[in-house]
Amino acid sequence: MKMKTFITAAVASISLMAVSAVAADLSIVSGSTGKDLEFMTKELAKFTAATGNKVTIVPMPSSTTDQFGQYKLWLAAGNTDIDVYQTDVIWAPQLADQFVDLTATAKDVAKSHFPSIIESQTVNGKLVAIPYFTDAPALYYRKDLLDKYKIAPPKTWDEMAAAAKTVLDGEKSADLQGFVFQGNAYEGLTCDALEWVKSNGGGQIVEADGKISINNPKAAAALDRVKSWIGTISPKGVLAYQEEESRGVWQLGNAVFMRNWPYAFALGNGADSKVKDKFDIVPLPSGGEGGSSAATLGGWNLAVSKYSKNVEEAKKLVMFLASAEVQKANALEASHLPTIESVYDDADVAKNQPVIVKWKAIFQNAVPRPSAPTKVKYNEVSSLFWSAVHDTLSGNGTSADNLATLEAKLTELKGDGWK
Image (tube, rainbow, N blue to C red; front, side):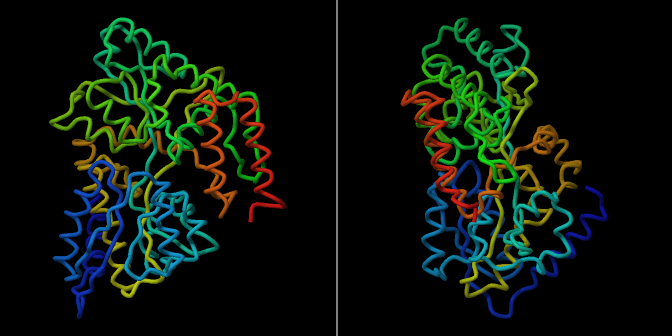
């Protein structure tokens, strides 16, 4: 990062973090995935030292579906106990009315973030949340095992499956799995399945213009391909895996390939990891025949509850955590992708987390979930989609029948428009 950028950010931070006349007690919710709680705790100690404001972390379950449900309950009740919410990139349209408009607060720094992310958090001209970090998944692969069998990193899903089978046949280990992913019936499966379908030319479930597109032969073929993996290169138990279960198998050295988010990279190279220095990443494979890689756009943002009793101090907290300094630390310590583009060019990041540079290209080609066109109905859309996918992978109906039923349900949900 250029020195001028650091100076500008530092001046902004000093202005924001002036010690309050009366210290406030704030609260922020945080997920428990990877190093999130550890990192957040350390950064909040710095914020407290600078402002005098004490911050309590309210831990949340790792399932984003469970988090969203809890958020809705708290916000519907006008809960004043939570000041700052961490929000998934897809939640802005659904929760916009419950959060403070941060447009004026972030007017001097918003332009430093990727424009697409700021746009995703803007609803009817209101900046609902400030970007904290972004996400796009990759294909993790065991470099040592692929090298052993002289296999190049796969570019298509069929190449991945063939490579996994070759290694499994060669290793003859009862513990080794070919490919682990997020197969449980929750939002994570929507992400995985969107990638399978999109990379196979099957569309994005609901297109940007609101058209329901999921019921098509290419989407069905993509799900049939994945179903063929269950019980062969993937364990049957993968249908209950979320991110952490997948990472657990991977980090014990018991998988050749894994689909996961950036946070798993730093943990995979931790001192206690069985795969330390034995793996690398590549973009997620395509479906072949002219298909292209598709990585679901993820990421987390910071929103201030309109029910907070300390809105101004909560704004300071949000701006501190979203700053270039904290985003750089988050990249170095937890492999989280910055939303501020200049952090990718920082010398420390390039030296100590060179994989972040690889992820920049993956992120720039990320595919959004259809939260924008489906608006407040996205959560129901996603639930219907992941249920149809999970049924298919579990052998509960064919892909063609399940997608036809899904289309009918989505059409009924849409009614005369996504409103």
